[in-house]
Image (cartoon, rainbow, N blue to C red; front, side, top):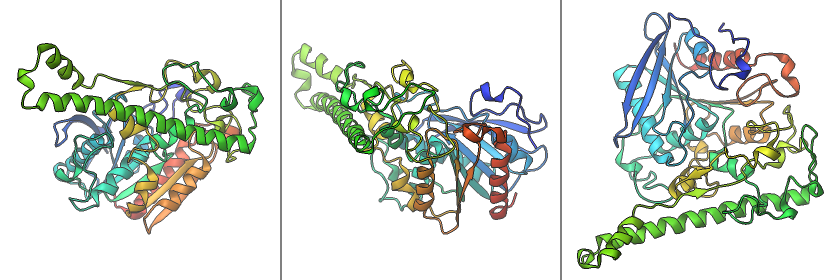
Length: 426
């Protein structure tokens, strides 16, 4: 059984510590059908080619050393870690382009490597990504998404999206936009000013029930309903800003295509040409503000006070680093808008009918018990299963009130490997 290094809890949170040097590793350059470039790293046992490979990817996170990989290989499977064209880059991310990266990876595994079975591992943001992919892959051409929410390419009907055979939904977001809608600070009243706020909707105001961590807060349920409505209203406000910016660029492009454009004054031509380049970016402040971080009576679980990013979300809420901090309007609508993005599990999981296992971390501070149970109910697979790993945080490290149970990863991987072996030969 792979062993975690003594300092694994302080490492990059999704990495394994070491792997058997006899494991074969092949770096793969992937070019999607639209020309976008991604990279893959294929891990195989020292001898032979297994019949089954597990593919894992995240919209932006480096999965080349995902903690599950040594376990998959030791169990006799191959593992393929795919880093997308948007590695470490939310600013330009269109989920529709990510689907083309996944298609390139699955095509490589099926056609060039000859794997009989491909199992998708949708971990964290990879869960909503793979669900979106599989839901679209199983639609006939002509009925798929024809454009991202902000318009423009790609038209998924124009591309081959080969299907996979199984799906592991692991500590998965219900959708990156859905998660962000739950963590956006509803008190923000001016998207250009991180300090402008409505005290009546400030979850970090002691008058509303806040207590500084590590103490727990308690929010009155009527206030919580108003807060959630405020979060949704803020997403709608940012959506409207994004669509105004997109329309402004469209006006510039239409002007540049007009028959009389060449005869117009130089100042006009320069102005419209520059507008057509869509120069505006969206900055989203204060994105660490989910009352569930601090009020442990909301969807009770094994979690501790705090978020997956900070033990003090009241301070991290104002940090320069944050989810969805800077992006194009198109990227906001495609990836981070809880109202506009197509990459959400409620939309896509009912269309996923391959064998599916849904696994939650009982101490997860961002994906809660109710989220995991909802994902299981949404799954359209006749063959589906749900499991919770006790004593585990979002990254399947020891965490929460049951952290004393030790490293959760061996327990997790025993479940996943056995489930996979029962359905797909190694």
